[in-house]
Length: 166
Image 1 (cartoon, one colour):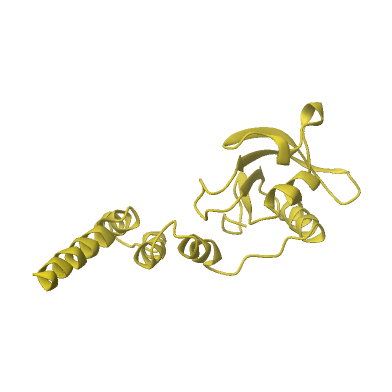
Image 2 (cartoon, rainbow, N blue to C red; image 1 turned 45 degrees about the vertical axis):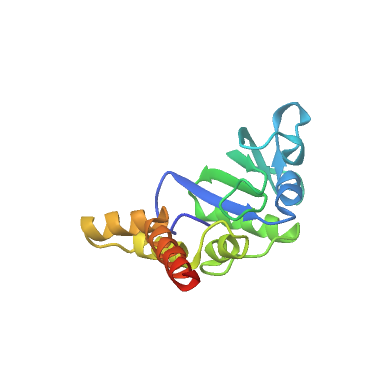
């Protein structure tokens, strides 16, 4: 569950990993019998989320992204649905029944680091970005997420290696 619990119009759920497309295919019903695991990468599809008895839970949008061109470097399916706790809980339970598990706090960033999509400094900056209390902190965190600090450190490392070589 990506969006915070509480009232709002929509909810974003994310499935990531080697089984993401397979799991999402089992809990989705798309028009013309399309399957999530057979659609092109980086496409959006409208359809129903279905429970383990193939009964509709909600109408949703499915954003399908094949790795490695994703934040985590893995296959990812993001499900945008109505923000109702009964709907959300049913979708989560259905995904778990099909082999998913709940993500741990910070797990998507951890996977991105382990798959060399971002570095540790960028992962820390994402947390700072989320919790920024001032415009200045927000701008600084955003720059670090985009790699400004990491690039600066890399340049220093290269300069030191050159100096050592001389």
